[in-house]
Structure formats: C-alpha cells, structure tokens
Image (tube, rainbow, N blue to C red; front, side, top):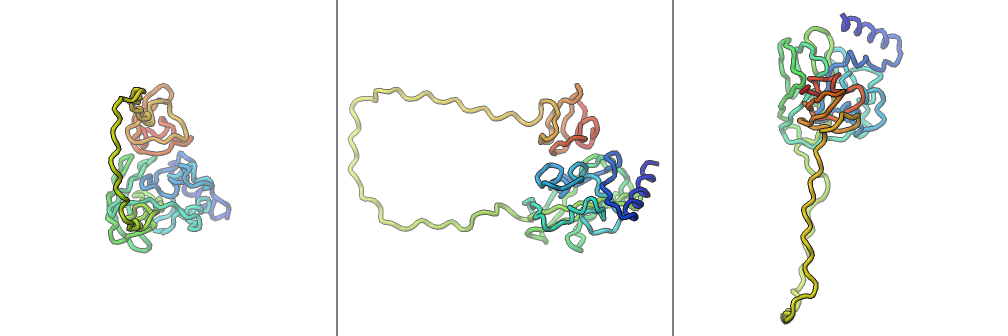
Amino acid sequence: MRRKIAYPLMALGMTAGTTLAVASPALAHGYVSSPPSRQALCASGAVANCGQIQFEPQSVEGPKGLKSCDGGLTGFSVLADESRDWPAKSVASTVDFSWVLTARHKTSTWEYFIGNTKVAAFDDGGAQPAAVVNHKINLSKFPGRQKVLAVWNIADTPMAFYNCVDVNVGGGSTGGGATQPPATTAPPATKPPTKAPTTPPTDPPAATKPPTAPPPAAGGGSWAAGATYKTGDVVTFNGKKFQCRQGHTAINSWEPSIYTLALWLPL
C-alpha cells in the first residue's frame, strides 16, 4: 500500500510545478555503486554540491522508457548536468556493474544504453533480486570515454530506476606520452681504481631499521559516517557486529541496522 500512495504524490508534486526533492529514504530503492554512478559519486563526496541526491542516491525513480540520468525529477537535475565534468572511471573492455538494492522489488529487466544503443539487457522475469546484483557487460565496441545509462525496470509498477555511469573504456593512466630518449654522449674517461683503505672504518655500521608495519585495514572499529569500507570489513554498531557486503563510503542514514543485507551482513 505504501508504494501505491507514493507514486500519486510524486506525480502531484511535479504537476503543480514545485521542486520535488525526492521520495523519503523509506521509499528509496537502488543504485549502481561500481563503477560509481553519478549519484554514488555525489553520496561519497567525490563530486560536491549535488544537492539532495547526496543523501539518497538510490532514489532516482521515474516512468519506464526514459533516457535521462535524473529520471525526470527536477530535484535531481544535477545528475543530467554535463557541464560538471563528471569523473570517468577507467575500466577494461568488459565491465562488472554492481547495484546495491535497499528495497528488492520484483524485476522485469535490467538495461544498459550508450546513447540510443542498447548494449546489454538482462531479463529477471519478475523475480525478486538479491540485495547486491552484478552484471558483466562487454563494452569493447565502445572504446574511450562513455556515459552508460543503467536502468532497473520494476515488474509490478510502471516505474524504473535510472543511473548514469561515466567510464573510460580501455583507459589507463591519462598522463605522460612517449619517453624522451637520453641524449647520446661520449663515455666518461676511465679513472684509475682508488686504493682501498688498509684500516677498517672507525664507526660501526648503523643498525638495520625494522620494517614499518602496514597500516590497519579499514573497519574493525565502530561504524562511522564518512568512512570508506570495502567488502569484508567488520564494524560494530549499537553493540552488534556487521560485515560489509559492498564497498561504499558511509553516510548518515546508511547505518548497518538500516541497510542490513544490502550493505551489511549481521554477524
């Protein structure tokens, strides 16, 4: 019943011409976390001044059939702003796209587009997905910088979720060109060998410095907003331990007890 109420309210807000910020986090659903979608970059702080989307990157929901990064939502229009010079993740020709789902709605299809070309589609046939969904996609026909539109089509509603992911297919380091060869010079004149000293040095050799211990891995302590966690990290929250299921940068309202199974597994 909650979802049936949410959609008319959303439509009413847009019809009245008001700026609809977003649905509440309780009605938020999923986003592409890797390679980072534009909303994921906003949520992690990698891109600043994003507005409301930074607090709920999983909320970009609009009618099916759109080709927009913001799902047609005025409050998320920053995601469609190409003047922001969105960072592009360097990837190989085959890319693993990973979704984090905070509400696992029955799914019809997952679709991926570059421009008007559908580069991949996955049919779930109305099944309920897992909390983390991964798709392996071949982008070898699209080398260089690309904007991939990832779409999650819900089976039992007319709605879909939209993510734009900027990637550099086949990209590596962007700096440095060909190495300048050294100038050819004549070899230096050979000097006669120096006679070795006949007495040992008066100072003993310096003691060998022990190797520096590697820094501790992230996690292991209390959960904290702003911390970056990788898959497998263990944190404590409200006296209970949780293991990270999906690498992410934590923000307030993403506490382990809220998004258990999507981001955290109770131990």
